[in-house]
Amino acid sequence: MPDLGHELLFGAFVTPDARNYHQTMALARLADTLRLDVVGVQDHPYQPSFLDTWTMLSALAAQTEQVRLFPDVATLPLRPPAVLARAAASLDLLSNGRMELGLGAGAFPKGVASMGGPARTPGEAVEALEEAIQLIRALWAPGERISFTGKHYSLVNAQPGPVPLHPIGIFVGSYKPRMLRLTGRLADGWIPTSSYASPSEIKDLAAIIDAAAVEAGRTPSDVRRWYNVMGSFTARDGDFLHGRPTTWIEQLTELALDQGVSGFILGPGSAAESDLRRFAEEVVPEVRAAVAAARGVQSSDDDDQLDLAPAERTTGHVADLDEATRPHLGRPRDHAGGDVEGPGARSADFLVQVHDHLRSELEQLKGVVAEVAAGHTSPALARSLINRMSMRQNYWSLGAFCAAYCRVLTIHHAIEDSRMFTDLQSRDESLAPVIERLSEEHEMIAGILTRLDEALVLMVDDSSELPGVQAEVERLSEVLLSHLDYEEEELLGPIANLGIEI
Image (tube, rainbow, N blue to C red; front, side):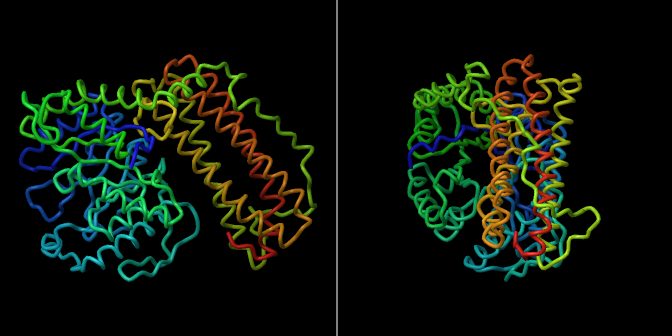
């Protein structure tokens, strides 16, 4: 698999050793100080000499500023997925959007059994993981209560929430064909470890993931590749990541460009602190530079685009919202009063819940911008390497929040355009003018989101660009709130009366 074009991430993979926890915590804090991107913590709840991983992650969230955190990987048979979903979302909120989720089916069944966990066959372990991924994602999305009946897990009228601050990625640790195929179908990322899958084996394993992704209607690039690697710096070159920094640089660059690996997470060795420093200071910048050079044409194009004055960027001017030209069908309703009735009333209520969530998130976004403007949050403190924006490698937590919000809003509009609007118009052709106008406003909002992304990228390098961000956020607020009100005014009644499913 060639380079997939994902942003590169580098980090540390630590063991929650209870006997040397001061050193382990210090190593994780060092990764944050060195401006690495991610810290993964092993999860083996049956190991009495280990700290509890989730407790450690919570402590690290309080002691670090920008590094991304995740269990590498969570032992699912001993972590009920409904509770895991709430724990991950909670830590994402408390860490300002710095949480990801690694999941494993349970590699050590004897250890799982010793702690009262279920005894599962390999096939059952894959089934349970698939159910867990579906259940976790359902609990992260705003909406109605959820009932779920699976072979291994169930929910009974469970309320979703809390909603994570950013779209948490689910990374699966997998090596066997069935688990690899599940990774390709469902996961946001794959995270093998070099001691279980050598660099020479990665290509064949990734091919199974890629084929499963394509079969599921996805693309290989939908599944990021992070790699837990072990190594040491030595005067003589030996096996993988055993040698001089130049050898490390060559090997990691090759994995990025030839096999699509975009995350390299260094496990602790006998000289953990000094190795991590050399990794961050001597290897990481050179690998970034080498990969950027190999991607040179695209990188150059992106830079040229960012150097343009705002009026000259390809997004162009976003048209003004003229509320007076909106078509109206004369079907007043008052969703706040709860008077929408009909076979699709629950769908209408659900749409309002989604809209209210977007309104709430917009207020949070405006609050973050206000904090930066007031000087309560400086660029240095606000930085977060969530890396959800693709234009640069350095991002602020403000940028990560905006990017996450923009992604949620864009997905919501895409669902409306492709499904709800089509169903409505097929049932009632008189709705066509309203639906056409709403679709046009979706395009207008997409343009504002693009301009907001550009303003955020400029602000990364120059804090004086903050007024541009403020202007785009205010523009988004003005247009989006008006749009949501208009959509509810015109469509909630038809959705309820026509029995539209959302």
